[in-house]
Image (cartoon, rainbow, N blue to C red; front, side, top):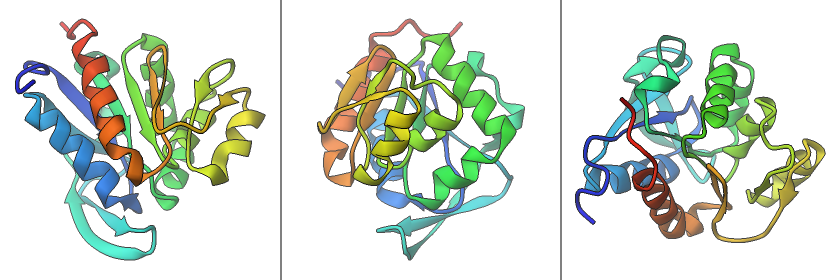
Length: 185
């Protein structure tokens, strides 16, 4: 639906090393559904994007640093993958606190590929069911999650997918979950 996210504002949290397609496709899905997108990061300026984790894929301008943002401003949160991106987010106290508070708020949080690493660091996966890229599934299990191998997994307000090949299902679940949640005041 072209306007199902009208009046909704979605935060994307990413750092250098973000997998470009895992940022761009969900952003396009939100914008096409009438939503607004704001890119938060750990530093101002721009972040370096990647293709297939290794190939430089240009830069993406940051709208605001995460330490200046509040959960109340947004209707949903997206955590794109890439291996370096979540590794950088995991060591930033403001990013981890923002993710923890967002999950606890009950608002939709969508993480794809290596994106759930930040959920592990925020200690919000215990007793939840998620999927992810195969290489971080042990980390999810060790943090108390049940891990499934599905293109998209929705457990309450958490939406997770395995890899870029799952982006169509991920984007659909993301927009549906945000549309079915009350808008922020």
